[in-house]
Each structure stands twice: as C-alpha cells, then as structure tokens.
Amino acid sequence: QVQLVESGGGLVQPGGSLRLSCAVSESIFSIVPMAWYRQAPGKERELVARISRGGTTTNYADSVKGRFTISRDNAKNTLYLEMNSLKPEDTAVYYCNNYIGNWSWGQGTQVTVSS
Image (cartoon, rainbow, N blue to C red):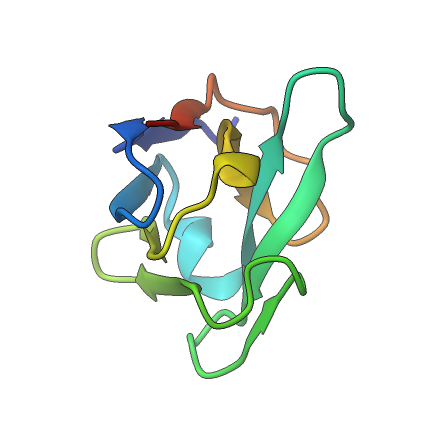
C-alpha cells in the first residue's frame, strides 16, 4: 500500500512563502500523475495543482495560479509545492495524492496564513 507523508507546513504571514514536500513510499510514483489537494475548515477537499508523470505538464486551480508551483523529483519519489504570495484564504491542511485521489490519504500538513 502506498504511503504518503506530507511536510513543510507552518505559520506564515500574508505575502510569505512555504515549500511543501510529499514523500511517497513506492516507486510507482514515477509513472503516476500526481496532485496537491487542500481542505480548509468546514470545506470540502479541493484540488490545488496537478503534474504529469514526467513533470512537463502542470495545471492549477484559478485561486493559486501564478503563486504556486508544483514539481516532482522521480529519483527521490518526492512531490513538491512551492507557495508564494500566500493569502489568509490559503489556510488549510494540504495533502498529496495521485491525480485521481484514490490512494489512502496521509495526515497532511497544516498551512496557516495569518498576521
């Protein structure tokens, strides 16, 4: 069973930056399109960004376009999310998963944007 371990979250002021990482336990990572999701309090989980298995194609939710960058290192089985110009509305628990979201979810990493 694939295990997902997210890290890199924290408390940051508006306008700040964070870099999230997701370690994937299986080498299947390198052949699967991946994605970052987030869930804010009282809201459903939403897709934030997707990346093709080779890393050449990316897609973003309109709310983060131009501020977030998804990337991957297939040699390290690791997915990244670079987040810049953070806003209070970016506050959420961030999760990684495949682009369908059908692997067991990890614990996620909390991102709080507040002054």
